Image 1 (cartoon, helix red, strand yellow):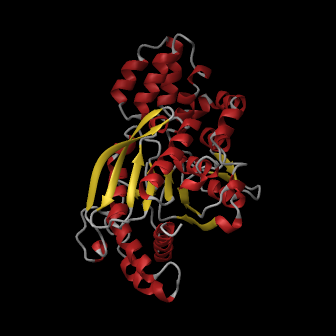
Image 2 (image 1 turned 30 degrees about the vertical axis):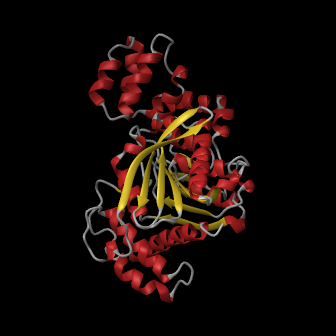
Image 3 (image 1 turned 45 degrees about the vertical axis):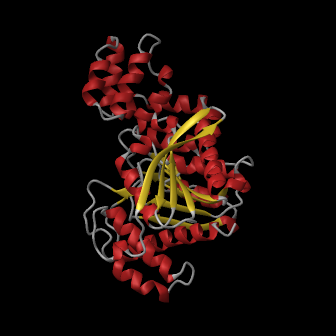
Length: 388
């Protein structure tokens, strides 16, 4: 999952941004008018990587791509590096993939990283092994921190870190860690979580809370319950079934429906009955056990939650969330904004111009202008990072 055009997005979703960008200099002074033009250009290329329009290629660079790796105490981490050719001292950014089994090879993430690099930013995308396996773990936080440290050492400047989905929340945790704090110039969290247990309860029940105590009810993503059962498979299947059950769920999450059904056929009759309910997205069949598992594993959820750690943030933070996000509800960014020190919260945008972390929906012109301004703020922070 990444901030990129959904498969259903139409080509003209952001075309109106070109006109809007012309008007922005009269409204905004920082970031600059040039930042807004570059932001509109970037978004047009994110919408359609094959576009040949003049505006979409204003101020862009050819991108060199290479496979690389960096070392952590737990071993080497694979990564991809995107470098704007002809820009020897480009600002640098780590872009973190969301929950997807292809990780840094996911085609939409690759296109997203290329679009940013073409805007004059050196981009490193590290492979987060646990996230690619649909598990959110403290090890991913450390990998993110070492990715920022490695790029900082390469460039000589603290770097920006942009995290998508659960990786956005983990990026905030890494930035708050004293071991990595000096390696971060800013953090952009797109569709991020604040409290993993609260998100888990939403995925199991379809309800969550705003900071003001009011309740939000919406239908969670169809894979939500599967993600939780996969994480705590021991709680839902017998010892004899758990290995095959985990593999059947993994294959389902990886969109290998035939493979999942073949693996599910190896379960006991009781295991098959439960798996068939999960395949049918009957989350209510496991709701009681899900809620019990969330309570039982409260410490594990807390270990991957920014909640309670954000007062340590000492760099600018920009939060972007889709209004109708059905994986991590937009209320999570409201919780993040409440806890991040006021001086460090440089932007908060909850927008119908994106879904979870994809450009899409049916935004109005005002929503498109606001998204351009948000991206312009990112590019402005990237430029400022070279002065740190």
